[in-house]
Image 1 (spheres, one colour):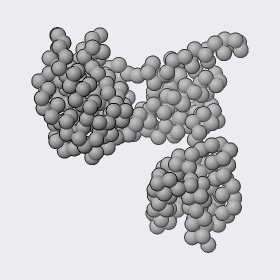
Image 2: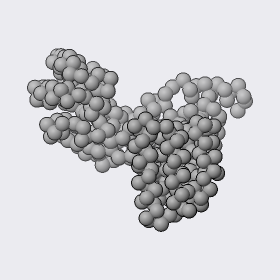
Image 3: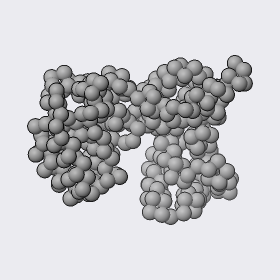
Image 4: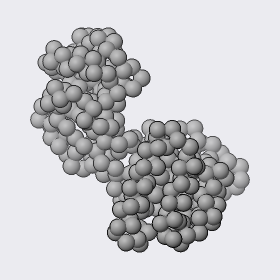
Length: 328
């Protein structure tokens, strides 16, 4: 391929958002949650769809499942009979009183009910949730609600009891790998096995993050390799995280601090992301169980302080200093 052809191909790849281009349109095409999709499909086949609650972390397929349900129910008419609202943008009671009720009341033909998809429903205020409960009761004959949330515990019990709850766990590595390779084949991208593993590691069960990382890396070069993936996703290599901890445990605080500083200031990785990677790797450091538990406790404390607004670098350096002192 000539340089001009390569530039044209890269430009074409950058014009479309792959998370939308490759969003599954049918329940059967959704990877990683076969048990959930099969149960939902059975509701549709029996024409007995209840209100649904989809709970789980970001990028695990909740929105994709909701839109696939609408496509299964309405075919080409799905956009006229399906509305998506984001509760984090409109958290108050007005969104329930105005947009949801007006959609539920509007006339439509040919179908027994319409579907309202309320994304990030756990962001609704308690007053809005109480109003939503009453709306679900009032329009249950001609409207089905699909609520998605990160934490179902943030939804009031009267709403939870009216919904069939489906939990979406972080996607398995195999599901992310299969999707990444499928997209790479469709786009004519050469991707190394190490790069695929790096995307899976960086995504941590988030399919959206994996696909976005693949697209970003593919725009940069025709061949996606491990180095490009870690650079484009601003993720530290697992061996770099391990080296920092090993140096601290060996009592070499200065070297551990220097490597941490490189990740924070030169590579530009956020302190919270480093904490997440530490948490994922803590059981791989080969420490005695007691030391591993202590490290986990300290990681949790640092994570809390950073979330509360403390200086990221200072807190991470304090963690390394604690490990170095414990070793001494």
